[in-house]
Amino acid sequence: ERAKNLVSKKIDEFNSNITTIDVPAEVIPAIIGKGGAKINSFRSEGAGAEVEADSTTGKVKIYSHDAATRETIKSAVEQIVAENHIGHVSIEKTTIGLVLGEPGK
Image 1 (cartoon, rainbow, N blue to C red):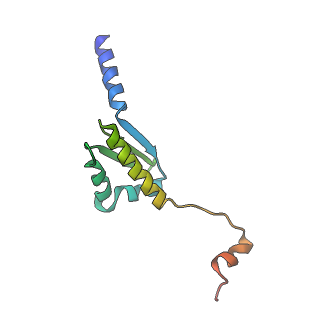
Image 2 (cartoon, rainbow, N blue to C red):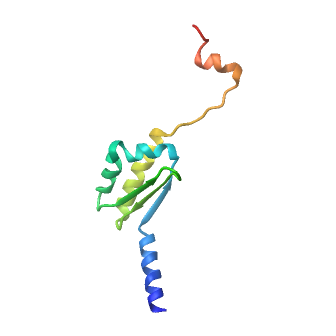
Image 3 (spheres, helix red, strand yellow):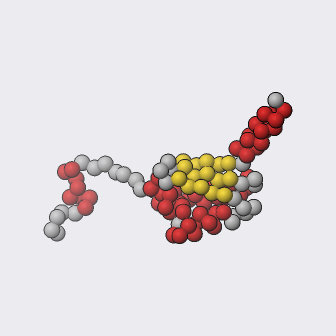
């Protein structure tokens, strides 16, 4: 029972050092960066952190014992999402010419 409580305490302690962010999966390459440069720069941020980005689920996990480091990386990821998020605007078919211009002109 004592060992079970100790393991449970350690798991809770570990989980408290994780911040998870859900982002659009198409933004994950921008978070990783060319050759992993961006995600590696996050890993050396502040007190050091481990960052995982899953391109299938769109989840970014930030592991660090330092809350300020987790928050700094989270803010940087949110900034990347804001800069790279693709939005969709629905328009009626009859207004396409007004938005994009008349074909051939």
